[in-house]
Image (cartoon, rainbow, N blue to C red; front, side, top):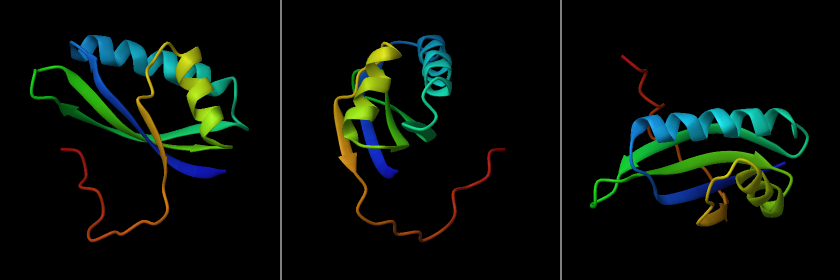
Length: 95
């Protein structure tokens, strides 16, 4: 599997919409464990107030990542292969 960053710009109006999409994504991902794995997502607020995500996935290929998004009813504005990882500090723990 390869690692990908998936950008979903201006995709949700509310946190509830985002949570519903996350539930669909998880359910779809469970049906294709050999093709795609959701690792984590960072949620950001766009300038217009909508929510966007930068998602880290492992997938067989970019097509599998896009297929997963389509089946989950989500956008995949950009699917970019990760070529390297630079860790300065570990992710902070949630409070």
